[in-house]
Length: 375
Picture 1: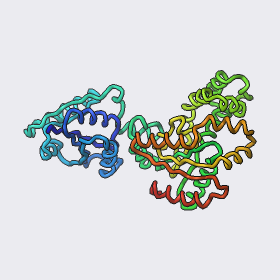
Picture 2: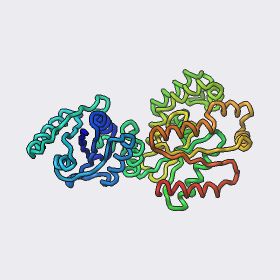
Picture 3: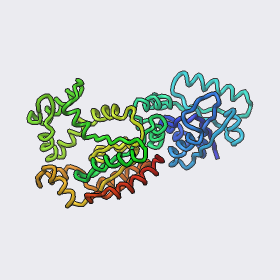
Picture 4: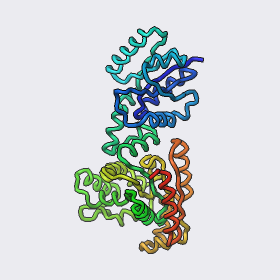
């Protein structure tokens, strides 16, 4: 059996590390991933946390074992009957460092060799340090780390516990989000209900930055002058157009996707505690990674749904068109469950919200949510 060793600090483990590990795991029968302990280094995560992040990120690699070590790496390799140490190289500086490390290992005369694997170009900019800096400014890191690591960074650096809240139109998302915030406050837990639709409204109506003016022009260009209102967008007129044509709704979502993410960053900055990302189209627009595939999906019966939408002033024809423009409960549920399976992380909470006075059920649900995030 051929056995190799790959060492890292794992503070945290990134997709750059994972790529090297996966390639090494294909070349050797067994690979030990060793989390190093350097007393001269200040780590963000404890050793136990770093090991857990590595184990979860590597759970699908059956020939990979996660361990930890102190002292000389070459000694650890010798004691574990390993003849090859794998090193990942991103830059010229990495190459020089690893060359010197190899010479030191050779000087110990233990017969252990070094194999270099060069980082793929598209991953060469990824480092643990860069990921931490991006998270500090609420940047997007889901392309750099696994969902579990992303959730761990949000907790450690930003003191945030993010969950998505979604459901069909008329399922009571705003009501549930606001009530969860009140219940959290009663338990002395910081909580924020961020409605992505309100962020979209600000972009379409109020924000004066040049980019958002261009976004509004793009909307008018694609959907006609009739959606123009003063210096903003007539959201009612826009709604009539996009909810009658799924292709046009998809186009609007494409236009709004990046501006919403940029504004969401500003909303998240300096907010601590439970963060509820409230949006009808989290599953449809593939924004589930924002909440690390932790989602609350509201269920509502047709009668209650129609009554709520009628109170908003929508006609039966308008209700029908809007419901047709979104995935129904069953399809949302299927997509969310599949995403959780694919990413090996996340939790789907289903909350039935048909009753008008549903405070007790939501209060019970809050206790479960509090336990899940250890709030």
